[in-house]
Image (cartoon, rainbow, N blue to C red; front, side):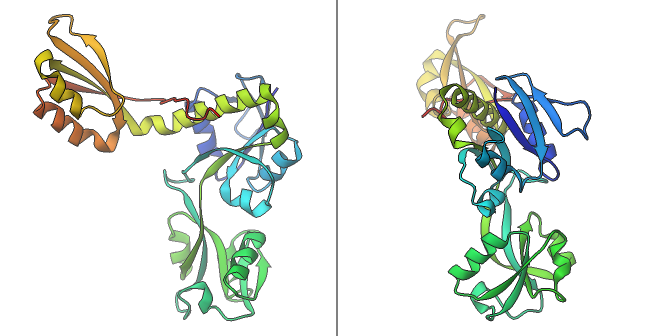
Amino acid sequence: MISLALPKGSLERRALQLFEAAGLRVRRSSESSYRGTIDYGNMTRVAFYKPREIPSLIESGSFDLGLTGADWVEESGAKVEVVEAFDYSRHSEKPWRLVLAVPTDHAATCVTDLVDGVRVATEYPNTSRRFLEAAGRRAEVVVSYGVTEAKIPELADAMVDVVETGHSLRQNNLRVIETIKTCGAQLIANPVAYEDKGKRDVIRNVARLLRAAWVGPAHVLLTVRVPAERLPEAALAMPADSWRAGSSLADENTVVLQGVLQKRDVPATIGALLSAGALDVTESGVGMLASDTARA
């Protein structure tokens, strides 16, 4: 049996979407339930916790596997196995940042401009202390339990917090002077569970499925019909690792090729294929793109 801890709150919706896209739908009695199951790998125990709690739960062995933010893995210092990483945030397909910010009228442009004794509010005291000490700054770290922007100026002079769009900073007259870390979601495993072959096989397969669901939608499948005599030129324009799918049923002298590529490369690739003599090119969406790159 594999036990799984999933994030409650800001990362919850994206986590559930990713698991469902991977065919690992989390079943629970209601959206407000903190317990669920997955019909795969005997995952009969799925529970939801705050992202900051999950690294310690995985390290302690309370759960075998968890999904949380890389910022909380670093902040906790938990000894866990990072199995897979996904660069998405709550609102976008991009990672978020852990930053050092000051009021817009502050003179500082980088961390070394801050004076000794500066008060820094944050929900990440361990990460902040390490960062400030590495920069040679002696600071008073003020632990925040949310709404960190409101701590300035009465309780703090600067802050360390996560940023996605920067909208909240701008609304509170703050600006970034340093990016401490770029963060995404991480699939983490308990080291002891990961050493168990039976559990490790399930964990790796879960990681493969999640990765396949994550990268798949960014790709398309191209199906190309080309005259046999133009095959050499068309093959050069196909994506790497393409394959010959066969011949046309209507004309055995027409060859069918297929290949997977990223969406951003579609316009140039279609242009090159048509210039190389392709009769037509059909684009199909990709739901999942699985590979064996996770094998160790």
